Image (cartoon, rainbow, N blue to C red; front, top):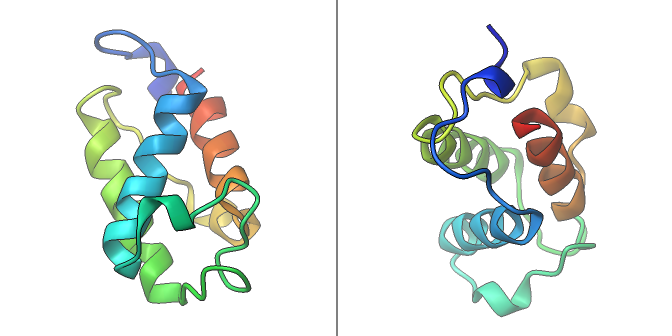
Length: 96
């Protein structure tokens, strides 16, 4: 069943999702959260390699699995995630 039908607790706002992604990404890249902007490119601006992005996806899936049963990034969608905004928009759309 789609993750959207199994929300537990209050839905997350777009700002909460942005904060979650920024915090996890800052931990992975060992930088300050304030250094991450929504329009930043993972590769060009943040110098995140593919391993860092995989870690980010796994961290987000783990965090959100507590709120939405079965939440996950689809493998075929990962190549479209080029900026922080792309990741936020993806999570927002998946959570409904």
